[in-house]
Image (cartoon, rainbow, N blue to C red; front, side, top):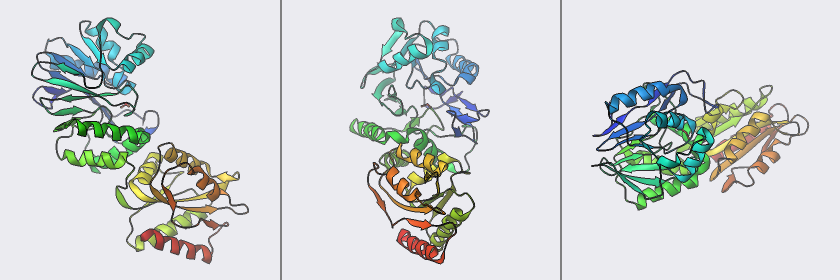
Length: 388
Ligand code: FEO
């Protein structure tokens, strides 16, 4: 049990056994499920945690309570990595009030067969809850990243309990060698990325309310206390689909190595010009890492083989991953390979037709099997254009 502010204590858990977070995301540094308890005149528990850590969480909660009975469980987010122990909490503490948004109670009915009608407090945007010297103010944050999400601002400690926002992959008891941003960015674009508008709405709401935030308590990753303008600023960049870093993301698929050769040739030419390049073989890299790179940089090159008259499967998946997250405001370049009927560039361009503010650095480059001198010249020219 770690003290966060004067009356707030951390009671979450680290998961080093998980293979894939949400059944999809590799988490080599594990995962943290955060939960907090505020011990004022009234005791409020902020979310529960993943099903596998119910005993550990309940043990930490009871240790923090030291014989007290909690007055409230505040359910900010119903995704099971946070809500799995709601029914257990309710059974253990029958006198406690369950506080959540109206849509969250519908989800409780769906998950637990109970919407706690006799003991619930339905939270609406702007509602307050006084615990004694701490008053909690609730901010609805629909689709950050589920519809029922509520965030909580503790006026006394100037703490924002931010649900999934400002979270990251990685357990809290492991130092992330790459710092906060890398795994936070992969988490953001993987999980929240589609909902940029809703994150922008939330940031605007926080700004309009003039909240003085000095601590952010997310549901994953470390509690943030220093340099909060940096975290708020980077969330503004990410959620507005802005360019975070100068550079070019080059993603390719290859069957016999010829398309890889073209992608590597282009990457080398760019690097010779001092351009930062993120090069990803989509069949072999961690796809969410490539998604993160595509959103991080302002320029994206896609190089792929024509396959079944269309786009090679892993490239098709990758483009879907981007477009369904509202990929926009980027400069693209397309390279296709096709030994007898190259079609991939046309199909890739069509896949981005509904994406906003996409421009092309150059006409598509077509390789027919192996690169020719003409292709090398085209790639030299593309590198020149992208480096500008
Ligand atoms: Fe961490 Fe959306 O659950």
